[in-house]
Image (cartoon, rainbow, N blue to C red):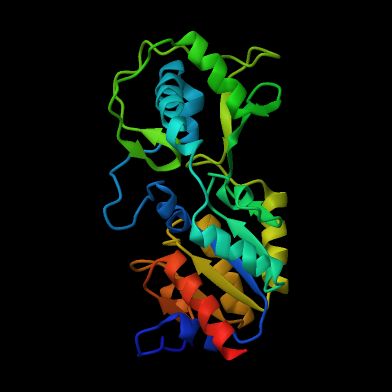
Length: 279
């Protein structure tokens, strides 16, 4: 039977009390990257979006045109985003030996850009491209250069940025999609689309980390997607402490030992301060 969440307003001090001297496994979501200017999916004020599904992407050339036109323009913001205080705080905790691992649902690569060494990119990485024909992977920057040559002057001046490097754009029929330079096949960002499964070896590695973890801390995820929520359920079944830091409700709240309804950067900064005072 799940115990009730603490009745007092949870704070970073509460987080320190629950975690104690345990090493924690971290699971991050889009809320970690909002302070870097990357919109999230379901947080307050999140833009309405109709994400591309894997089936749609494979089905028609028009769908691939729509995806790559919007992603090509969106990369100008996604590709230049910088890590924020939350990413830096996690690097500091890793350096201090406080973490046993980090699983991210984000595809922006900001944990690695911040200097985090031990990262599992659960849903892949937008800075890489894979061919659906020959499975060759290449750097996204290379594809951006090719697309720029194929589509000079493409796109409006004003753009509305959406999650995962997407932008709001309806007129995409004139966009020229680049084929794989090796086999001529269709290119796809090396990320998990809606309707696509995370590779089993990657899931198994995450499950191993949860099985060995002393505590689980979820940062900035509503846990709406099962690919991440499964690890919270696994941690709960093991009986280890679970702390969830997220603005608004999540689908894992009832399983949490502590829920902190606040931003990730401010909470991690407060946690560092509270643990320093305790030393």
